[in-house]
Amino acid sequence: MPDPTAYEAMAAALARMPDPDSYQEVRALEGELAAAFGARRAVAVSSGTAAITTALAACGIGADDEVLVPAVTVVMTVAAVAAAGARPVFVDAAAEGRGMDLADLTSKTGPATKAVIAVHLAGRTDNIHDLAACARTTGLRLIEDACQAQGTTSRGRAAGTVGDIGCFSLKDGKIISCGEGGYLLTDDDALADRAAAYRTHWQSPAPGAPAGSRLGANHRLAEPLAALARHNLQRFPDALAQRRQQAARLHRAVDATAGLEPIAPADGEVPNGYSALWRVTLPEPRAFATRLAGLGVPNSVGTHRLTAAHLHPACSGYATGDLPRARATVDTLLAVPFTEHDTEQAIEQWALTIRQEAAAWKS
Image (tube, rainbow, N blue to C red; front, top):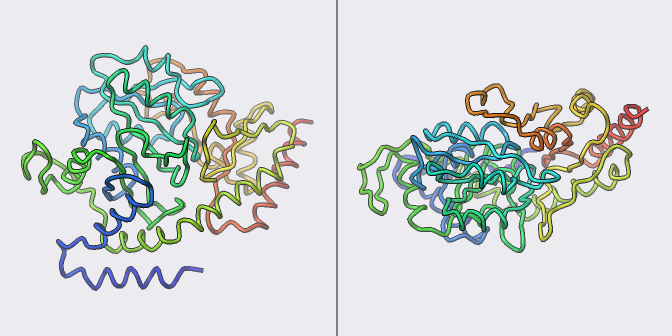
């Protein structure tokens, strides 16, 4: 059932709308997000994709620049880089799919390379600290696409706070949501000021760039949506605990299944439970994931057609060759995501379906 107090929060925000320049809810949300995740600043925007594009603009990245992107990512990450006018350069996966291959990343870093984007797919940060050290050594900006990682921590740091700037989504289905929206986290005041200026057509000043001195975009978050996000942020601890419990329940019921190997968290990582994760060792793993989706078990490959980005038709203009570990990482992935509406009974039914189908598939 919808939470009636959420509608009350939105109604209060709508009552203040005659003052369009107040942005009272947005400013309050930004302060609360920064405090919740241990960042100095937060900047609210209109979507997770807008957050990445705004982060790139804040870092001064645009035409003729290159941005290193993991091939194991959703196409929206690539779209944000292209929207910023930069060129995405795909990096292969590390061994066992643990983040980006740093050797491949280094080999693809050149004079035009300005940033690297780490994508915390399914709430896992993988080798983010090694990647951060590599970025510091090479002088690259590190942007975290943490849209699926609200609440994940690694070595005590919240996802999205390890690099220069972290990007998040507030779309329905995320642990904190408001229908549509996003935000950035950073400890760098200059980056935050440039992000805030860019999201509203550069109507506010930023270091070295007075108001109106540059072109920006309309990536503002509407006041009613900010009010709803604030309401759901208050519920975040309980929502996070629920996701972790859901993931643990499904793992307990499925982990012993032949043909499925649970993907453990990286050292020092506490995932948010966005998805339960296995490596499929059965033949034709993509067909297996599609079969599960048809039987009502949502998953990234079977339901959402997740494909290694360099093989996605929309990214063909940026592909420069096959990246075999990235392809294998995606094709053998079984990632079952959760929402707050998934009941214990539904999760038990998913588990039964997965076990039965895996046994039938293997035989």
